[in-house]
Image 1: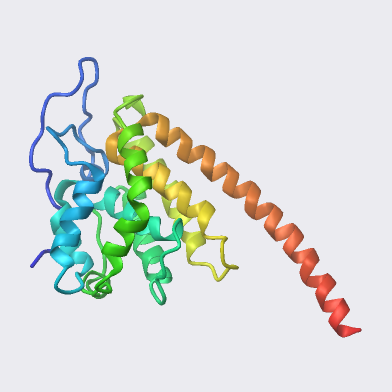
Image 2: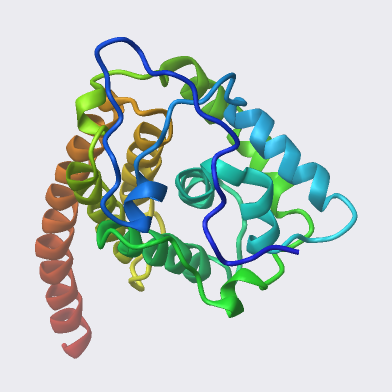
Length: 241
């Protein structure tokens, strides 16, 4: 149904006066630097389109990318990070979702065209995955729709800084792949949602918020490592007698 190539945006309009769109230096940059769009659908509308596609059966990531078209990869990273923020059961999918986000972000950070292995693209998601996601994420999506808007465009106007933003997403996604305790996925997933949302709508304020969330992740996991190590040794000595 779809190819593994990054979908082309359906159209372009002139940007806000004073903001010029830089030429991408590589195919990956073209996919990474968002262009202005006329009447871009809301996040909830994009998700509703995916649900309409998946009502009769589970959809594949390949089909999701086709539905999302020009917003595919930034929005896909945001959507796949949402289950980590919500009480949505995704047995057997947590590592897959984190891996997909990490691969996309790594390619974008290197300035390359977004790409996923055919095995991941053609993996069918559970029938109720996106309906459950919409039910749990409705408040989050509405909040993002209200808050996201083009601001501080210089943070997303050229490939070089945006590659750095993508690297932050990759680092956060790599944490999702680690076999850590339940609940530790929330901080890196929040970082991904904030940063991907900023890239999606060219909102520099959200992008800065993504960096702030990343710093908080470093602090959180530093304390987690220190006190977790102490707790482990205390329990070990107690068990050993």
